[in-house]
Length: 284
Ligand code: LIP
Image (cartoon, rainbow, N blue to C red; front, side):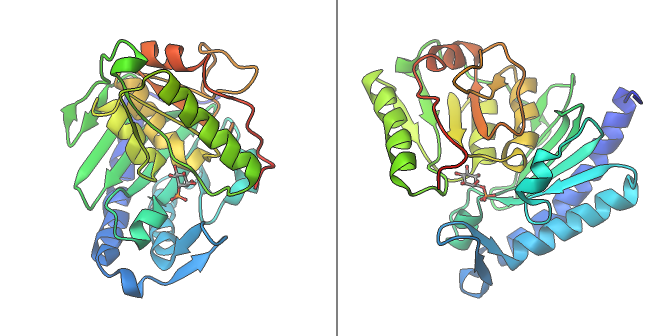
């Protein structure tokens, strides 16, 4: 397997930043014109706009030109079947707009997400919110940055002092509702200081990376929602794990596990044993 030097990772980051800027411009230009965003419905609650499609095309076009030998996995072009085929080869994992519902509703928590995974682990990540002008970047071993300034996760020592975040996703069945509400109940019973749900996995994860939130968890997320942001958390000193009924806090993050729990190690370790983990990808 070819090895990738820090200089290679820097070069990957440079191109990813240019692609994120180009896509971010498309998002920003259309953000305030909610009425004329052409919306298609993957389901009544899972939306895709013409901007998602155009932004993904732009990103993949720019990355492919620079790195024709790499693989690509995009929310709008790859789909879930592609996610299951994630290999050890360098693979760009792209969400052109994480927070599409927010975008449609002009709620400013949206992000262009570009991650590069090698051996199924993210080594380069860019999460760019062009509305709030917040650009998070990281390469493996090089620290995490918000608009060029180093960031780190919070030092909240326990759940009672933590503001925790999650999202409710797209499932509306009885099983999903019971599972989601079960975890909200767990947090309240453990006197969590606050709970936030703002509808974009990547922006919440970056809020955790820069320490304004203390933790994020969600079941149902895809690799493109979490790949880029996962390295930003890890490089900011936090941990990211894929909680399942049989996993442990020490397990390596599995980008395609459809689950995420991340934050400072102390909070992740405190939440891991108490959250319900019996989620099923089959649930609607
Ligand atoms: C969204 C995630 C969010 C999750 C939604 C959806 P999208 O991504 O960021 O955390 O709750 O179900 O996956 O679809 O806006 O890119």
